[in-house]
Image (cartoon, rainbow, N blue to C red):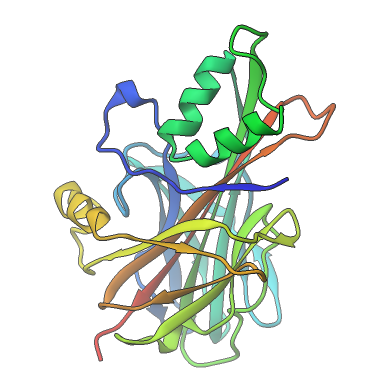
Length: 283
C-alpha cells in the first residue's frame, strides 16, 4: 500500500508548514588513505543549504560502509546550522556514508493531514487513500503522523574495491546500481528505490545539481535557481530510476513516501524521507 510523493520545494514560507530534506554533503568527495572523511548534515528545502542543525541525539545510526566492512561514525558534532561528522579513512576504496534519524511524531486533525499531503506534493496519494476509504473523516478524531529521514553519500578514498551496490538497510533507501565515481556529463546513473525491503514501484522522485564550490552550502539564491531546474523521475516495475547527468557539480536525488503505519505502532501514518548525494566531475 505504498504511495509515493514528490518532495515539493517551497521558498521558506513558515506558513506553508513544509518539512525539510536531510542531506549528507562531504567536504571532499575524494580523500587520500590515512586522511579524514568530513561531512555536513544539511537540513532545508533548498539543496545543499541548511536552515538548522540536527541534534546528534536524533541519530539512530551513522555508518561508513566499504566493500568489506561497516563501522559506526563516532565523531559527531554541531557546527552552526549543520550537523558535522568525521571519520578516519584508514583503508583504500569506495566508502558509503549513511545516517538514519529517529522518527518524530505530530498529532494533527484529519483536515491538517490532508493539507500536509497537498503541500508536500501528494494530492494523488490523498485522492488514492480517500478512494480506498483510508483517510479519516474531516471532522473525525485527530491522527498521528510519524516521520523519519535517511541520508546517503559516496566518498572515494584513493583507489580500491567498489562498494556502491551495498545497501545500508534504511527503511527508505536509494541503492546504487552504477558507480557514481565514473560519471561524466552525458552519462546516466541508475538507482533502485527500496521501501521497507521492497522495490518502490512507480515512485516519484526529484534530481538536480548545483555547481561545486565553497559557497554552495550557503548560497540560497543559487540553490533556488538550481531547484527550478530539478527534474522529476519515476521508478519502473523494478523500482529503478535513471538519472541523466546534464552538468558537473554537486548532485542530489530525493523522495519521500507516505504509507499507512502498522496497527499498534503508535502512529496512523508513516512518512519516510530519503536522499542521495554524489559528485560529477568535469570531463
